[in-house]
Length: 234
Image 1: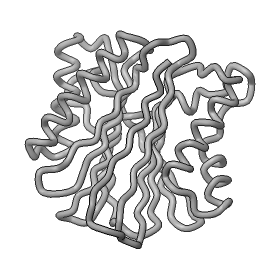
Image 2: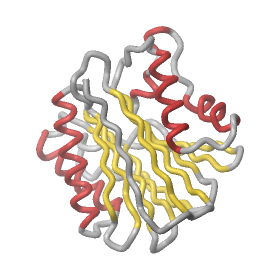
Image 3: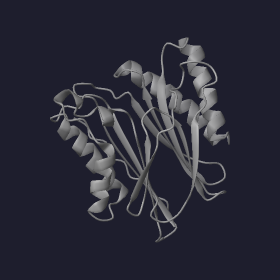
């Protein structure tokens, strides 16, 4: 099997900095973790918060701290630092090669979508953002790594798309529509979701948007791990 990961991000219109931060870190005993955080509001202040959260998280993950304990510790640190006045949403998706599972940790009101074959489910159990009070716990879900499994997680900018124009984004139906067109790669699915959101906002995103797609493929080519990043500079 092979796990493929794709990310598509865009800033809020007329904002020079995104409040969303994403990092990928290797796990000490194999596998990788993808960490996506969205600081409260947008712009430079939100970026500072999300970067602080992500840096603390990946540092603990690299030391072997479990995802749930990691999220709780970082939430307490943010609460202490900001006196409970600043929040941050966060998702962690960890490919755990010891258990052959993907572990999803969610401190985010928006759902995570789980796709397999022609079925699309979602994880939407009530979840609290980091930093709003002490002892915030993530919602943890563990899934077996099986070929065809596709996971979609994102920041709330995706769900805000189109609202000011009276045509809010329907993430579930857009995912289904793209999957029904064939067997999209993670890049194709993340790009399609982001492009649709931007079009609903008439080319001027109302919020920072980040989309992460993980997909498990059955085939394996060589044993090389690869990562590709595209950073447009205006």
